Length: 454
Length: 164
Image (cartoon, rainbow over all chains, first blue to last red; front, side, top):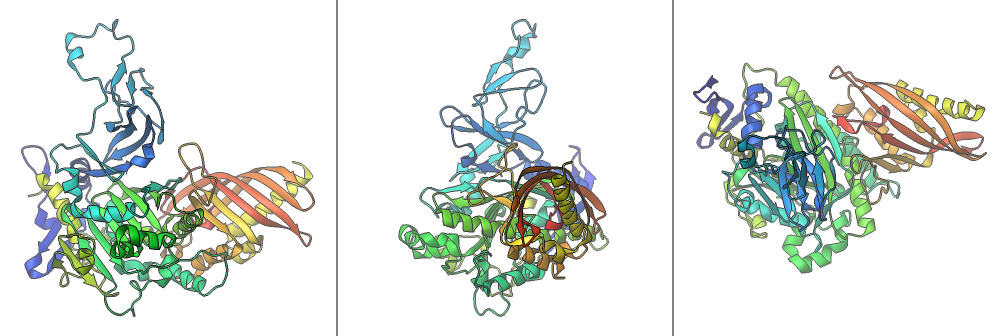
């Protein structure tokens, strides 16, 4: 590490990520999870330097609805104006920089700064500077922009909202690319689209944000980290009682070591997005089952079948949609090299029956909540990794190597069924548990960090 | 405190003691087979979810069978989150009898649970309100319902049923 003329600390990429595809090597250095200087640069270049997910359009459904979020360290407001147009502003008054809106969500035609009463409308326009005429401002003041600062780029794809503080980024459609077809699978479950079930669950864990990034795409850990949950699933499956919830994963083979043949795989896309997936079958254990026939008619059998598959989708760097034991939307917010905040919701098709919704919620709580029976075993492992990675002498991890010899360019029959063209793919049996898809994260990470890597 | 409030305060203290001691089988025996065990989530800054079939809860079970699952997982030796058990201490106060007759009682109280996470050496506290529903079965008060209204819902890593 050294400082250049711009004052940036420069890191040597080859000392952080050892990417030699021709030699079958991909390694990540522990420094990526622990180095404080690197973390500050990540905030600036990964999170504040490109597209990130900020929320769902359904969180501000009606005129003057708003919600607050963060882009890296920067607080933002997403607001729907009186004409129904969505905007994304920096959540800070231009006067003294005070955070304008403190609430998580709400409805307001006017936002009044609590400090000196500068006032803004739901489109971000300044509607009042207190005692402006008697303020004896210097002549330059009138020439300044007193409105709320807009983020450089803001866009929506099928009610998923993304923003960038950096204007020099590809269009949102280019950024999402072929991964849009996987968002479609989430949205197309209902002609009415998706919504977040009321009730946000927030938790922190004392480890780096990339532990969560990887874990969502890590099929390898499931039977090792969650045997206590798996045992309960198998016990419940044998019982004839309405007291316990039916588990969607019980009938699936993709995680069972003795399953034969292809059980799933991974897809990698441009700009860091990945999917890992497993075959699940059109089962009554899933709340989607009530629309199984309707979905086949609306979308075709192939897409319908994909909707029933286990799918863990990451849209780099901070959005994950996990469709396995139930359906979850996660927002990753790094706070420090060794502290991460997770905001999580149950994401569900609009208009599903009361019975299906209740089943989805019950399946969700037991698996996904930090108060449930699975996620705590993940987050404790992240923390143990953070502790164990204090050893820096040989910094190279061995956790990104499975599947390197199975990874091929382009897609396969399963992606063809979605007319989807991934950059790379792995077709897997139950024991392959691809880790080569992690390369997609770190290559996108290196692209966003290019200005401070040499 | 009225005689009745004192009686229920003792029952709440008994439940707390069993959790603090890790006497989970005895703790389960306080509950009716069809009990409600519910910790709502927060809908926004100021309101909690209140329809568990349409809105998310942090924990929602109908039936002691589910609490037995939770205990079985904690004691299975297969959960890394439970392998080094946190030490907990429940403080319960402001016990009020909201409604009571010979067969049924609704009791409000507040709780502070101090948690020392032995694995990491960190300590934190969970606090909020309880709403217990007791029913009298064969001369003994049992818990037919417990609602846990958690006030500090930014959860550090995990929260299990022994720490609320």
